[in-house]
Image (cartoon, rainbow, N blue to C red; front, top):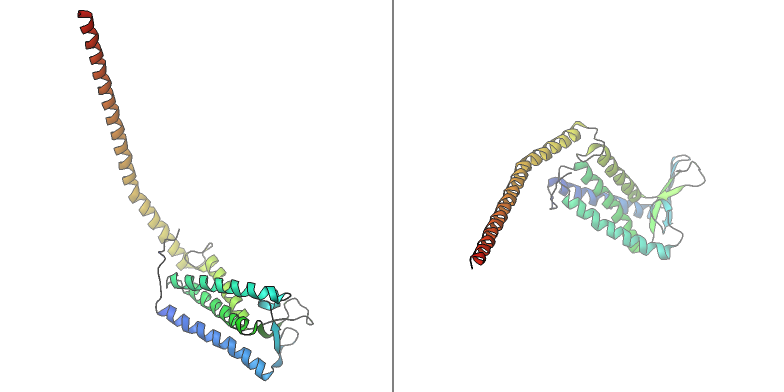
Length: 237
């Protein structure tokens, strides 16, 4: 297991990523403002990606959960705030050497804040990027930059933890493999260091048990002698 104390780890990388997170939030809010002000309407890839302004989504990412905004909005706002608290905590305590992890978390935080601003201000999210996700040009799914940030950041976290981090399940890089090998060697060394202490404790326990048995035998012998002496005294009388 990875042994890391939960303490603040805010260095130069984290400061840069905080600024980067702020820039992503600004980019999301600015694009939402301009698509609304300028009434964007153009095609990037015909039949696959188009930009169309003034799309409003009372649900969450990619127009999901938009059927009942009276119930959905409070739930989504509460869930987003809880997740933000958790993500900020993880960002603070994750060591600086986990660069990809911190970058990914900062991207997700930016996306979550970008959409949370819309939910508080408008009770809906401004979408303007239409994607043909289900190979049906007549049924595009609309999203915004914040949605992309959340999806990309979450994917980065999963991929990093699976393949590239020093805690990866299936480490592929030399750095990850070396870090895991070093951690195993450290754990083995700690185990060997604790073994003599354990053996010494067992030996001490055995000595104590033997001493206790000897005391019991001595007490039993002395008691038997006293009984014999009492019997002899009674017979003489």
